[in-house]
Length: 177
Image 1 (tube, rainbow, N blue to C red):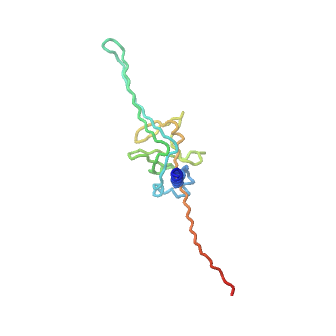
Image 2: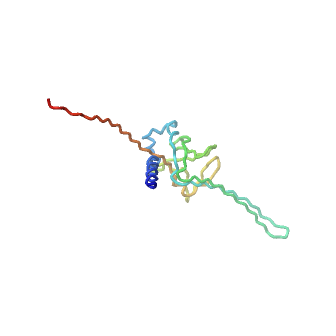
Image 3: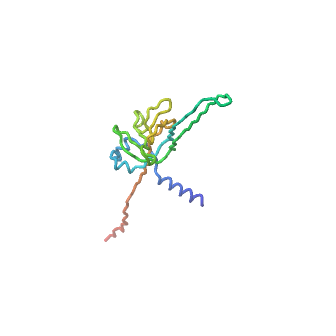
């Protein structure tokens, strides 16, 4: 009995959440989201993980007192990982229809998404991809986006609500006179 109640609760919860669908030009037109005021009310999500890398390295070469050659190197790597289904919000429209999406508070902490030709009109992460990598500016810093970032597109949650109103009237009938 307890399992049945848990299953029913879980089913109702999942049904009430809606389904996530790709954000497309068709969705934009259907819900009139070309206006900044309206699109700012939409919760966006990422379809796939986005990974941004930034590497530093420094080093020096020299000799030690005993005459040994010394190579000293230091490297550091900063990674920003945006997991799949991460919540994000609209920031602004670009000049050519692209949209800038914000993942966190801060100057320049947005990524640009555009409709790719022959991409089912989905809004994909914008960059010049070459060999699975692309340079992207995030937070006013240069990063290299790596796979699977190139296949990341925007997703929105769609809830279908249907209300039915019914009025019942019971007819008593007519008696012969």
